[in-house]
Length: 96
Image 1: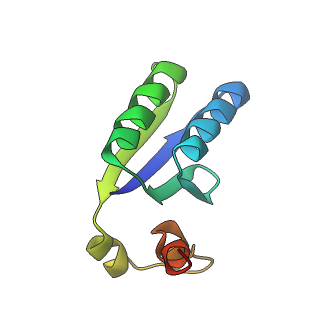
Image 2: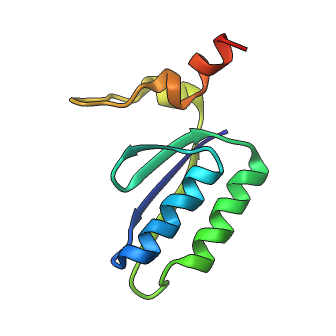
């Protein structure tokens, strides 16, 4: 499933932990505070739980949601957009 994680985290230390959580489940950083990737459902649950345990719930905000590949392909990307094929593992799967 394609998963987006977007956050506004004030504390640098907490933000670094959130980045590590996202990368550890296989999400790609597409902007400074936005991650996207094609991950398994159990990783989706894990990232939500770990981020909830990590962030300051009174001061920070984190959005975690899914999107279909069809919806991603319809999305308009303007300017320095990310590589859709890399994020959806289409490039990686061509080599294995």
